[in-house]
Amino acid sequence: MKHFLEISQLSRQHIQSLLDRSIQFKSTRHYPSYTDRVMVNLFYENSTRTRASFELAAKHLSMKVIHVDLQNSSENKGEVVEDTLKTLSAMGVSHFVIRHQHNGLPQQLADLLVDEAVHIVNAGDGTHAHPSQALLDMMTILEKKSRLDELKIAILGDIKHSRVANSFQVICQKMGVGELVLIAPEIWQPDVIHFGTATTHTARGLKDADVVICLRVQRERLLDIDHLDMAWYRKHFALTQQSLAHAKPDVMVMHPGPINRGIEIDADVVDGPLSCVLEQVRHGVFARMAILDALG
Ligand code: NCD
Image 1 (cartoon, rainbow, N blue to C red):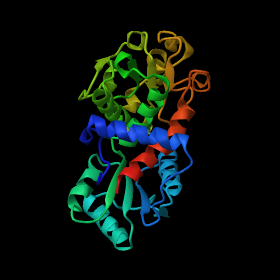
Image 2: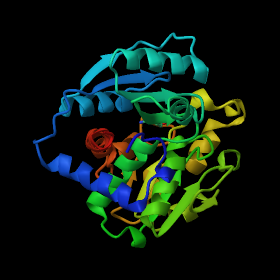
Image 3: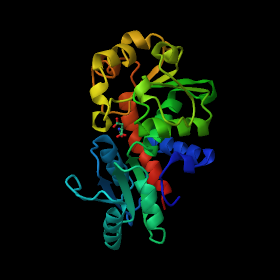
């Protein structure tokens, strides 16, 4: 695999082999050693877990990891980022993990640098895709629920602006998930549905769900936030003990993080016995090891 850009570019077999490799990395301490590979995290948007997770994954595989501080960078056009990649590539950087606010930027860079010996990983582009999150979410689900075709999964929240929801829909479709319901208020209904059905009705959407993924209220992406009444949103769409009661008693509660406790999800749900949130974080390292391992 040259790049890891979008779940839609992978076959079911390929996704399965990445999942198998992730699970294998979880169960062994014997990791391959890629001392000749150099990884850089280029994060043009804030991140704690994704960035740390890729860094740890690379280090477990004995890759060298360098840091470039882009927090205050004025780069925001594909061509400028291309120069950064070429410069770092000339220094010997082979693996570029990129998070950027611009939809499609990792793919654009892969197209521009088609002749270079560089590997690009999409760590989240705008509202478009977040494929490594989809992989770690699927790994987490598969550990507890083996029959994907029998599952009902619900995603709850701001589906419209969520790259997590986009990539997750595609991985569910590829892997043959039985039922996927996208629950959002009218203003956050998706423009495009890749897989599943959309509803504005939380109780109906959560009914008998085996898994519920709660999404963050992404204030930084919401131009329409001023028109959203938070008390109203909480009443109708927050994941609380009360709304969770519609799901199956052993429902898996997931959230990609970061979490706004008391906004989209209640603290007692995040910290409760059904929560798999920290398991997702743990699995993120193994899933990203599998991705880096496959990029040779
Ligand atoms: C997500 C992201 O950045 O897309 N978080 C993450 O990667 N763990 C979701 C979010 O920001 O709400």
